[in-house]
Image (cartoon, rainbow, N blue to C red):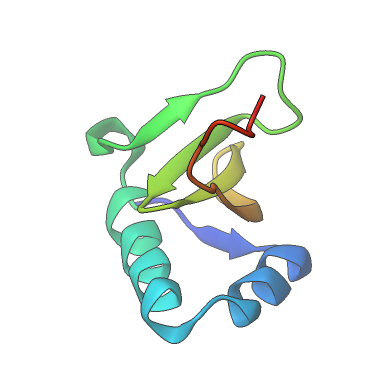
Length: 85
Protein backbone atom coordinates (compact mmCIF):
# COMPACT_ATOMS: atom_id res chain seq x y z
CA UNK A 1 0.00 0.00 0.00
CA UNK A 2 1.54 3.31 -1.11
CA UNK A 3 1.08 6.60 0.67
CA UNK A 4 -0.45 9.24 -1.61
CA UNK A 5 0.70 12.83 -1.15
CA UNK A 6 -1.02 15.65 -3.04
CA UNK A 7 1.08 18.69 -3.89
CA UNK A 8 -0.63 22.10 -3.42
CA UNK A 9 -0.58 22.75 -7.20
CA UNK A 10 -2.45 19.50 -7.88
CA UNK A 11 -5.04 20.28 -5.20
CA UNK A 12 -5.68 23.72 -6.72
CA UNK A 13 -6.12 22.14 -10.15
CA UNK A 14 -8.46 19.51 -8.72
CA UNK A 15 -10.69 22.20 -7.17
CA UNK A 16 -11.07 23.91 -10.57
CA UNK A 17 -12.30 20.71 -12.26
CA UNK A 18 -16.05 20.00 -12.25
CA UNK A 19 -17.34 17.86 -9.38
CA UNK A 20 -18.05 14.69 -11.38
CA UNK A 21 -14.61 14.56 -13.02
CA UNK A 22 -12.94 15.44 -9.72
CA UNK A 23 -14.66 12.52 -8.03
CA UNK A 24 -13.52 10.19 -10.83
CA UNK A 25 -9.94 11.41 -10.47
CA UNK A 26 -9.91 10.97 -6.68
CA UNK A 27 -11.36 7.45 -6.89
CA UNK A 28 -8.95 6.45 -9.68
CA UNK A 29 -5.98 7.78 -7.73
CA UNK A 30 -6.89 5.81 -4.61
CA UNK A 31 -7.70 2.63 -6.57
CA UNK A 32 -4.86 2.63 -9.10
CA UNK A 33 -2.00 4.19 -7.16
CA UNK A 34 -2.45 2.24 -3.94
CA UNK A 35 -0.55 -0.63 -5.57
CA UNK A 36 1.47 0.36 -8.65
CA UNK A 37 2.19 -3.26 -9.59
CA UNK A 38 -1.54 -3.75 -10.30
CA UNK A 39 -2.16 -0.35 -11.94
CA UNK A 40 -3.64 -0.50 -15.45
CA UNK A 41 -3.65 3.10 -16.65
CA UNK A 42 -0.22 4.11 -15.37
CA UNK A 43 2.68 4.70 -17.72
CA UNK A 44 6.30 5.50 -16.91
CA UNK A 45 7.36 8.60 -18.82
CA UNK A 46 10.72 9.17 -20.47
CA UNK A 47 12.23 12.60 -21.10
CA UNK A 48 9.43 14.26 -19.13
CA UNK A 49 9.35 16.55 -16.13
CA UNK A 50 7.45 13.95 -14.08
CA UNK A 51 8.06 10.22 -13.73
CA UNK A 52 4.61 8.72 -14.35
CA UNK A 53 1.14 9.54 -15.59
CA UNK A 54 -2.29 8.11 -14.83
CA UNK A 55 -5.08 8.38 -17.42
CA UNK A 56 -8.54 9.22 -16.07
CA UNK A 57 -11.00 10.00 -18.85
CA UNK A 58 -9.86 13.20 -20.56
CA UNK A 59 -7.49 14.07 -17.70
CA UNK A 60 -3.91 13.07 -16.99
CA UNK A 61 -2.57 12.90 -13.44
CA UNK A 62 1.20 13.32 -13.35
CA UNK A 63 3.08 11.97 -10.36
CA UNK A 64 6.46 10.88 -9.06
CA UNK A 65 7.15 7.75 -7.04
CA UNK A 66 9.95 7.42 -4.52
CA UNK A 67 8.49 5.02 -1.98
CA UNK A 68 5.39 7.21 -1.77
CA UNK A 69 3.24 8.58 -4.55
CA UNK A 70 3.56 12.38 -4.93
CA UNK A 71 0.84 13.78 -7.20
CA UNK A 72 2.25 16.86 -8.88
CA UNK A 73 -0.10 18.01 -11.65
CA UNK A 74 -3.47 17.36 -13.33
CA UNK A 75 -4.00 18.34 -16.96
CA UNK A 76 -7.03 18.17 -19.22
CA UNK A 77 -6.43 16.66 -22.65
CA UNK A 78 -8.61 18.22 -25.30
CA UNK A 79 -9.79 16.37 -28.39
CA UNK A 80 -7.68 16.82 -31.50
CA UNK A 81 -9.15 18.32 -34.63
CA UNK A 82 -7.92 19.76 -37.94
CA UNK A 83 -6.53 22.85 -36.15
CA UNK A 84 -4.43 20.90 -33.63
CA UNK A 85 -1.24 20.79 -35.68
